[in-house]
Image 1 (cartoon, chains in turn cyan, red):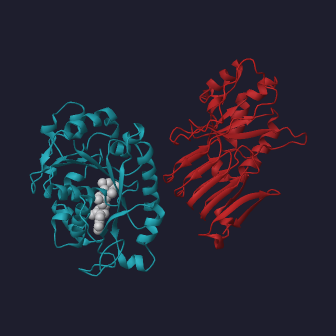
Image 2 (cartoon, each protein chain N blue to C red):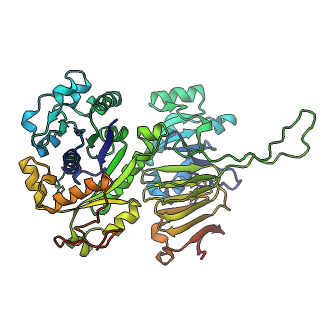
Amino acid sequence: MARIIVVTSGKGGVGKTTTSAAIAMGLAKKGHKTAVIDFDVGLRNLDLIMGCERRVVYDFINVINGEASLNQALIRDKNCNLLYILPASQTRDKDALSQEGVGRVLEELSKDFEYIVCDSPAGIEKGANLALYYADDAFIVTNPEISSVRDSDRMLGILSSKSRRAEVNEDPIKEYLLVTRYDSSRVKSGEMLSLEDIQEILSLELLGIIPESKSVLTASNQGTPVILDEKSEAGQAYADVVARYLGEKKPHRFIDGKKGFLRKFFGGRS
Amino acid sequence: MSIDPQRTPNTLPILEFKSSSTLFVPILILYSNDLHNVEQSLYEKINQAPDFFRNSPLVFDVQELNKRAQDLDITVLASLLRRIGLFPIGIRGGSEQQNKQAEELFIAIDAIRSSDSSSVPAETPKPAVIIPDASPTSAAVKPTAIPLPAAIPTTIISHPIRSGQRIYAKGDLIILSQVSAGAEIMAEGNIHVYNTLRGRALAGVQGNKDARIFCFDLQAELISIAGDYKTSEDLDKSLRKKPVQIYLQDRALIIKDIA
Ligand SMILES: Nc1ncnc2c1ncn2[C@@H]1O[C@H](COP(=O)(O)OP(=O)(O)OP(=O)(O)O)[C@@H](O)[C@H]1O
Ligand SMILES: [Mg+2]
C-alpha cells in the first residue's frame, strides 16, 4: 500500500508545485518508487517544473475517464527511474475530476508505488478537496505572512473534517508544516512573520524551512526539481525535509540566512 | 446563534435568531406579523453584529405565527429581508399558501427541520453521555415530583478548532486546544478554552445570562454571553496571556483576571 501525501496550502503561489516536485524527487532518489500527480486541472504546471511537458500524451482526466490506461499516461522522469509523473489536463476543467474516479486511480497506483504525492491546486474548492480527500499525510505549505498562515489554518480544518479518514473515523491525516519562501532579512525587519509566530498560530510541528532562493526559478526554468541542485540552499532544505519525513533527525537550518550555518532551534543542535 | 429575544413592552419577543446544525445559516424565528416591528427589531439586531449578518443567507420560521393564526405575506417578508441585506433561502413551518408563495420566490420549503436547530453538529465528537442513576421506573411507582431535567452532557474537544470551523454544544463546551481566528465556538452553557482563544466564542446562546467563558489566553475576535458581546477592538490587551473569565453583570460583559 502506498502512502498518499497531499501538498496543500489554501493560498495560491506559495510553492506547492515546487514542493511537490522536490519531495517526489527526493523520495524517489532515496529508493522509494514514487508517483506525483498534478491536481491543478486546467493550469498544467507540474510537468513544466519536472521538465516533461513535451512528453505528455495522456493525462489524469483521460485515465479517470477510461480513455487511457495508467501505464499510458504515467511519464517516467528523465533523471530518476523510480519517479513517475501523472500530468493534469490543460483543456478540461475541474469538473472532470470525480471523487470516485480519483479514488480508482489512487487505488491502482497504490498497488505499484510506495509514495503518491498529490500537488493540490490553490483554493478550498473541488480540486483542492479532491487532492486531499484520500491523503494519509499532508504537507501544509505556508509563507511567512498572515494571509498565507490563515489559509493554512483553514486548510487544516478541512483536512480534519472533510477527508476520507475523517469521514470513516480512521486516524487523522498526519500534518506537516513547511514554511517556504522564507526570507530571514524580511523576518528580521518585521515585514514577515517569524517561525515562532507561525507555529504559535498554527500549533503544528515544523517539518522544514525553505529559504527564498533564486535557484528555485532557475531550476524550474530548466525543468529539474530544485532538490537536484545540491549546491543551493533551497535544494538542501528540501533534502532535509525528505530525510526528516522519512524519520531522520536533522536540525533546522537557513533560519537566519548565513550560509552553512546550524543553529539551536526547535531541538536542533548548534 | 441566539442574540436574546427582543422584548416588546408586553414582553413578547418579536423575533429570535437560532443556529442550525445541518446548514450554517441562522434561522429567524418570527413571533410577530407586524412587519414594521419586525423590520425595526431586525435593524437593531444587525447593528449589534453587522459582520455576522451582512449578506447572510437565512431561513425564516413562521411556525409560531401560524400557531396563533397570524397570517404573513411571504412575498412582502422576503422583500423586506432582501432590502436590509439578508438572503432568505428557506422557510419553515409555513402554511400551504405561504409555502406556495415561497416556492415562487425560489425559497426552499422546510429545508431545515425544527429538530435540527441547535443540535450538536456531526463533526463534533460525541460527548460522553453520563446517564444519571438510571433506576428503572416501574409502572407501579407514579412519579410524585416533577422529574429533574436530564443532565445535558458536556462536550469536550481536544483538537484545535481551525478557521472556518464551527462548534455548537447544547451544554457546556470544553476545548483543550486552541481556537483559531476565523473559527466560531458556541454553547448554550459555559465555554472553557484551556489554550489560546483567537476566534469567536459565544456562551449562553439560548439566552442563559449566567453562562461564562473561561480561557487561558484571550485574543478573541468576538466574545458574547447571551447575546451581549464585545469585539476584539474593545478587548483590553493587558489581559493577554492571562487566564480570564468573562461573565455578564447588569448587561455588561466583565472580563476578569482569574490568576
Ligand atoms: N523557495 C522559493 N524561493 C524563491 N521562489 C520560490 C520559492 N518557492 C516557490 N517560488 C516561486 O514562487 C512561484 C510559485 O511557486 P509554485 O508554482 O510552486 O506555487 P504553487 O503554490 O504551486 O502555486 P499555485 O497555487 O498557482 O499552484 C514560482 O514562481 C516559484 O518559482
Ligand atoms: Mg501549483
